[in-house]
Image (cartoon, rainbow, N blue to C red; front, side, top):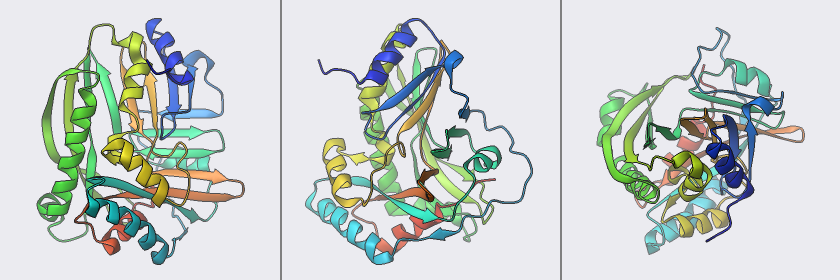
Length: 316
C-alpha cells in the first residue's frame, strides 16, 4: 500500500476522533495543511456559507494578459496530444499578472459560496464544490461550460453547444469513475443544469451536474484516504488523469501550487470541500490571477484564450 501524505494521515486521525478541522491541499495532492478548528491560525480565514457580502463598489481588476502567442504555444502542445488520443480533455491554466490588490478586501467583499484567505499569500472565492459527504452519501458537482449571460439566447447556446456538451460529458464520466474508487451505487442525479454566476461586468452562465455515491458507515476514519483517491480534482485536470498531468506539466508555464487544489471543513460528522479556483496569489510584490479553460479536440484557441481572460474578475 502506498504511503499516505502527512496531511491525509492527519485527516484520518482527526476523522477517527470526530475532531472538527479545516484543511487545504495543493493541486497534486502531495502537500497540505490540516488545522483542528480549535488551533486555526489567526491569519487564516474561511467562509463556506455564501454570506451576503457587504454592499460596496465593484472591485475592478487591472490585468496584464499573457500574449496570445504564448497561450497559442501551450494550446498547440495540448492539442497535439488530443489529436493523438493521449488525452480526451485537459484543463489548461495560466497565471495572469494583475495590478496590486488587497487580498483581505477581496476576501471580505467577494461574493462566493467558498471563500478562503490564506495568510498574506493567496485568496480564493470559489463557486465549485469538490465533494460533500452527509449521512454516508458522497456528492460531487462538476462545473464545466460557461458563457456570458449578456449574449442573446445565452442559455440555449450554452446547452446546445457541441463542444460544451462533449466537455461536460467527459468530466461527468471521469468523476463518476473517481467516486467508484471510494463509494458504491454511483449515479448522476442531475445533468447539465444552469447556474448564474454574478459578475459586476456582466453575469456568467455555467452548467453543472450532480453525482452521488454511498460510503461505508465508518468513512470518517478514512477521510484522508478517500480524498487522496479523488485528487487531483477531475474538473481541473482531465482524462485520463496520469497522462493528462504529464501534459499539463509540459504545457503550462508556471507551477499551480494550491490553485486547483482543494479546501475543506470537517465538522465531526459531515464534510464540505471546494475546488480552489477563482484564485489570486501574491508572489513577492507581484499579484497573479490564475484561471483556466477546458480543452477538447473541438476547441478553438481564440475562444479558449478569451475564456481564460473572462474568468479574471471578482464576483460581488
